[in-house]
Amino acid sequence: MSLDQLPTPCLLLDLPVLKRNIARMADAIARHPGVVLRPHMKTAKSAAVAELVAPGGGPITVSTLAEARYFATHGFRDQIYAVGITPAKLDAVAALNAEGASVRIITDDLETAQAVAAHPGRLPTLIEVDIGEGRAGVAPDSEALLEIGAALGPKLAGVLSHSGHSYAGRSEAAMAELAEIERAGIVLAAERLRGAGLTVAIVSAGASPTAMYAAHLEGVTEMRAGVYMMGDLLQAQLGVHPLEDIAVTVLTSVTGRYPARNAVLVDAGALALSKDRSTDAAPRDWKFGRVLDVAGQPSLGDAMVVRVHQEHGEVRAAEGGTLDLDRLKVGTRLRVAPNHVCLTAAAHPHYHVLDEAGRVVAVWDRVNFW
Image 1 (cartoon, helix red, strand yellow):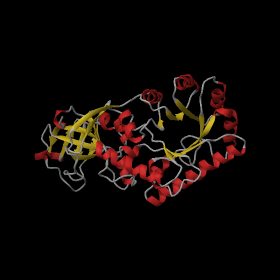
Image 2: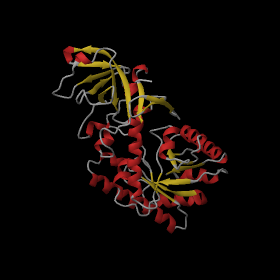
Image 3: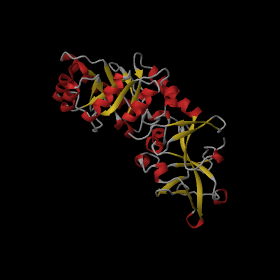
Image 4: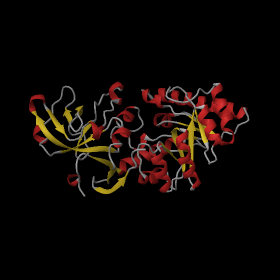
């Protein structure tokens, strides 16, 4: 099937690029003996992708109960559900584990830890530790860490951190420094719990930039990273992958031409692309996405989607440039590389998978929602 036969907007996945990105991260983690890569499937949300990145059934990371169920059904039973658990969800996780899965949960809340401990089901739990992101977790040197660990008792499985603030890094050295801060913090948390007589089997850290650039990972047992598989415009500027190695793009069609403002409209708007503006603070601001030709090449220069409405995207040339409107007739197919692939992909039910020649060779499902 050719791209001209697909409806627009829709999600494309370049298989050769995906495989390059997977291999690049695998090589980065292989520099650290004894450290396991636990890829985060919150971006890919696809069993077919999981087969490539975690062959043989895991380990993987998930971010929703829907993902946990879906991946367990597809044979990926070794999971960390890396969003703070609520007591209302404990029965669902325990049921999955009773059916043969090994889903570990996380918390940073003492009362929730007490609920986990009191639950009759198998609920191995990691304590979330905040090492600087400021989103969730307890400080590695806090009393709360030990209180939660004591409350969990034999259900304590380990500690977990996330260096999401590494996305603000702008050099390899800066990201390596953040990786070391995270490593030191999460290892300190593990040592304090062990010093209190508790068992800490898993010391789980990571994000794509720190997983790629960590100088050493002594004391860490596993690294979690996910967006690196697909790549996006922000990750390219962080050096996680080259700009040309963005595996996911949105196929779109020109719906109107406007010479007075040297712009075209396409049928990929806010719902198809998301409104994420993660590159607005990066060295290169790509507005709502970089526009490529139907072959995925930058033959339109640095054209980008500068404005979005629900189902409309406005494409203009980069500042100082012009679009060749003669080649952008209504119906012309283009591709948009996303700022933040996790949010862009979330709007789509499946991937149209492309081979080396740009032919559609498969359709892979995604598990969206919660």
